[in-house]
Image (cartoon, rainbow, N blue to C red; front, side, top):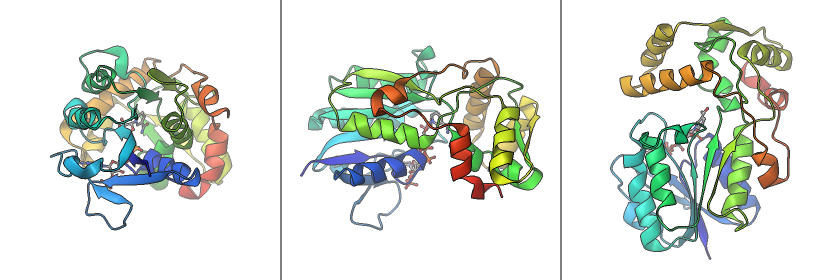
Length: 277
Ligand SMILES: NC(=O)c1ccc[n+]([C@@H]2O[C@H](COP(=O)([O-])OP(=O)(O)OC[C@H]3O[C@@H](n4cnc5c(N)ncnc54)[C@H](OP(=O)(O)O)[C@@H]3O)[C@@H](O)[C@H]2O)c1
């Protein structure tokens, strides 16, 4: 029976994608860089490509992403694209990030180009900033000080719920309708971080504010949280793009692909309210 390979299957998007595909009756091969603990897992470490020669056994479609924490996404992903091509996979869906195609020489864009040039049937999805960052990456400041600390001023972002990204990926992996197209994915509207904080406050009952911090303070905080210097600097650069307004745009692709409107931040906040209480 054909199987769908999901990279990052334990992560925010990949776990929901795996769940959705299984609910549709698909057989999912869940990749992990760790030692597998379940029969539906395969070990594949993108840092050394250990496991790649067997990871696609019995697989006919695949979902790829670049694990966070690394700035050489092209180096990490190129061997997977090549292996997918050698195996003649029917479809590869790559999740990159909104704005990744602004510079053809950016590592993530190089990974996209490798897939585009592979001859494989593909989709590239480029989500905007995830809503789920407020219950993961930015959670520490909310828990400890009741503040979202970011160097983004009053700029707005059309944050997207990761569950909608997963729904898009699930549809693209199981349909030929959209072959060889790329999609910027956003939530329904752009909000600034004061508006986000107010929505999280209303949902959770915990007073949450927003503090605009200098980029240098953000860099220090990211490094103290254990991020490598180059990845922390990369995040600072893309937060600068957010501040410059590049994350404000909205698209209608979630609805176009899934038939459902993307979730609002209020819906997200209601579902995740326990994270902040
Ligand atoms: N957060 C945002 O706002 C945002 C916006 C746009 C795009 N993105 C993109 O989204 C992607 C992250 O997706 P996510 O948030 O769903 O992921 P995530 O929750 O951070 O999870 C990362 C996944 O990568 C796997 N992984 C880590 N190291 C690995 C390695 N060496 N080899 C193979 N797999 C490895 C992990 O699985 P194991 O631990 O089991 O190996 C885990 O499932 C990134 O490419 C990022 O650029 C994020």
